[in-house]
Length: 220
Length: 224
Image 1 (cartoon, rainbow over the protein chains, first blue to last red):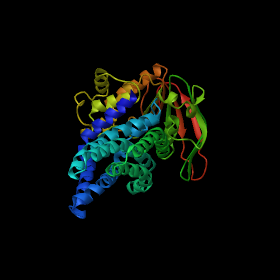
Image 2: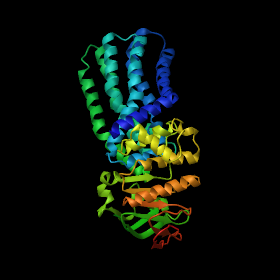
Image 3: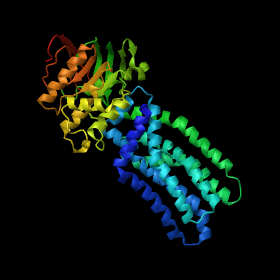
Image 4: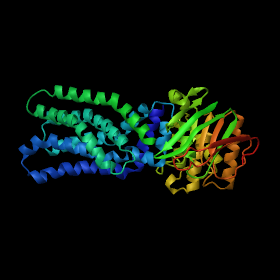
C-alpha cells in the first residue's frame, strides 16, 4: 500500500515537473540524431552502429536523470519521512525506482522503436533492440539509484554519480547492444538477453538494500 | 514508555551532550529547551532513529529502537525542521500522500477535515509553492491530525511561523494527544501553554571540547 502511494506520488510529481522529464528524453533523442550528422549518411554503417548509439545514449540520458531521484526529497524533508515508515525502506526505494523507470526507461524503450526505423534496422533487429532496452533499462534505474543515494547531499554529486555508476553500466551496455548485433549477424540473441535479464533481476534484489543503507548514512 | 539512556552525541569535532538520560511516561510532554546549537534537533533525530548516538541508546517500551526499527516507526510521527511538503503537490495531495506514506491511509474527507483543523480550508487545491511559510508549516502539521494512531510525536519547533490561532490549535491538539496517553517530545523557543503534564529537559551548550551538563526538572501543569 505504501509502495503504491510512493509510485503514485512520484508519477504525479513527474507530471507536474514535465520539463525535467522532457529534458531527459529530448537529450536522448538529440544525442541519437546527432550521430548520423557526424558519421555521414551511409545506411550500412549507420545500421551497424545504431544499437551501440541508442544504448550509449540511453545510458547517458539515464545518468542525467538521477540528480532528481532523491535530491528533491532530501531538500524538502520528504526523505526523512520516508525513512520513518513502517515499511522496509528497501521496498520504498524499489517503488521510487519503478516510478523512475516509468518516466525514463519506458519512454526511452518506446522511442527506440522510432529510432530503429530511422536507422533502417531490420525488423528482427529492431524487435531485439526494444526487448533489450525493456529488460536493461530497469537495471539502469536501479544501479543509478545506488549512485544517487551515495552522492546525496555532496557537492559535485552529478559528476561523482557518473564516475560511480558508469563502470557498473558496462555489462548492461555490452549485453544490451550485443544482443542486437548478434541478431544482425545471424546469431541467436538469447544468451545476451538472458544475461541482461540476470543483471536486471540481480539489481532488483540487491540494489534496493544498498540504496536503503546509503540513504540512512546520508541522512545522519 | 520512551527512555533515553546515557546518550552522547558528537557532531563533527563538537561534543553536544553526553550522559544524557530521560524517561517519558505515557501522557507526558517532554519539552527540550536550550539555546541554538545545544543539540535539540540532534537529540530529536536520535529519538526518531534518524541519527545514531555516539553512545547510549533510546528505548521504546523497554526495547532499543535500533532493533525495533519499523515496529517503532509505525508508532512515530515526526515533524522536523524541514516540512516534508512538496512544492509541486497541492495542500490536500501533500497531506494525503504523507498519511499514505505513514501507512495511515486517509480518505478525502479526512484530509479535508485535517486541513480545516489547521485553518487551511479554501487552500486545498493550491499548489504548496504558492503557500506562505506559515501555511506550508500548517500543511506539515495537518499530518498530526491524521496521526492519532502514532503514540510518539516528535515535533521540532512546531510553533515557528504559526500565528496566534495556529499556536492555540496546535497546543490543543498536543494536549489531546497527551490525554490519549501519547508521548510528545517537543522543542520550542516560544512560551506555550500546554494543558497536561510537561517535563522540561534543559540542554546547555557544551563548552568547546567539554561535556555538556544536562539538567532535567519536572513541573506539573503548564509548560514554561
